[in-house]
Amino acid sequence: MSQNQTSKKQLFKNIHIGSLIKKLMIERNVSSDRACIFLNCTKSELLNMYDSESINTDVLLKLSKLLEYDFFRIFSHHLILYAPPSSQTPEKETKLPKFRKNLYTQGIIDFILEQLRTGEKSKSDIIEEYRIPKTTLYKWITKHETN
Image 1 (cartoon, rainbow, N blue to C red):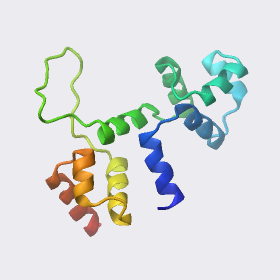
Image 2 (image 1 turned 60 degrees about the vertical axis):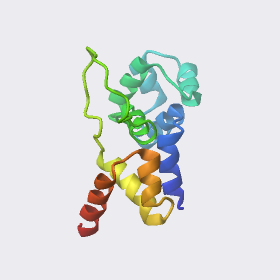
Image 3 (image 1 turned 30 degrees about the vertical axis):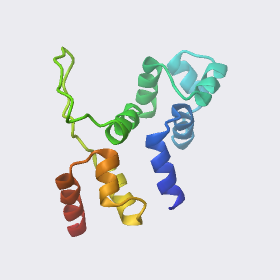
């Protein structure tokens, strides 16, 4: 497995949000001074954020805006891959917004098909581990073989 595949897999499974923020701050050349002003924090507090595995959602929202990157999507991808909704549990009524439960982004599809291409996982492994319907997986395979 290549370094990129390993890091992509770890990105979704074991999320260390602080290190991801730090990495993007460097990639986007955002100075710590600018970030501190935007977040209304000290440099010491910013450095502590880089070391944190978790972060306050208000701060994460501000960082998403500053860096023009949806950090929340990383957590959504984790939920799609590692905690998909069970088809055996009846859905309960809620006043909260309802999202389509099987909304797979192109990034998720690519991630799963890459595991299949490299032999890291078999079709049955993917279906079982990620609870992706067999027909959905086969549609992805067919669509991406022709592209």
